[in-house]
Image (cartoon, one colour):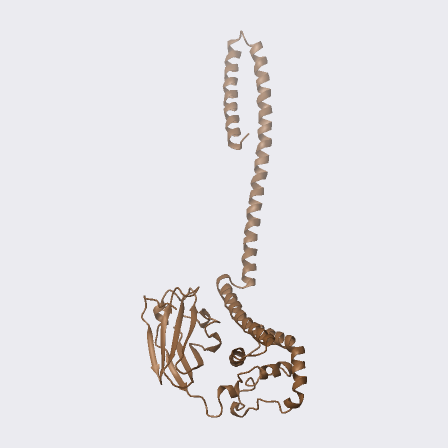
Length: 343
């Protein structure tokens, strides 16, 4: 992952864990903030880090990359928190993306994060005891009542949870058969609940951790495929939610769009009525022009007769000249009418 040169990196250290925060401009499709964890410890530790969301930025404008630990983030009103186990001497990178509305002022995102805790694994109660590192528990939950240990009410003491089924040894073969038969339906039901946003954030995080441990173990191939599909569904849900929120922010709700369309339709109706009114006026003028042309024709006929009768009469000739002048004026007026209305 390449470092952006325009902004300085921010580094914090606590209890043998160093976190480097930096701006990544070109590594991802959108600008992103990267956190690189480096462990100087000789044993695995669980690290909890928090970062402040800038005042003018809504948490909805931040997006977490599914391939860089999105399941380990929690979003609060004005802060985001990351919690994950880091192996001894290991490095780990996680990122979140910034929408265009917030990328104009990158410096506001480069405040110093806080390492809230670096906890050693509890004696006799490793994370593997709470969330097993094999797929047996997930398979049992899928084959049974659909519950995964660790997703019960928060008031229960996770240190005393019984993660095994007391009848499992006697019924192992039957449980495996039931798992194979019910796996498709239960996984689909879990995915539907996630899509419907009926699952609490904490439950999603714990489910994500359980899935991570199952994927890391050498589990049954069909179970791995279904778990990967569930992870993909979670990532798709986040992407769909972000896209829907962005669309509603830019375009408004469906009711607003319908209101805008109805207003435009009313304007169109008014313009159409105006055009129809003007068309009626043009038709009336064309009719009057036809009548005028007929009158001019009659006058021309009368003028011819007058010329025959008044060739020797000066008075009549003078009147004829006056009439000719009038007719000429009428013709000019007729030509103007034709030019005006395209006749």
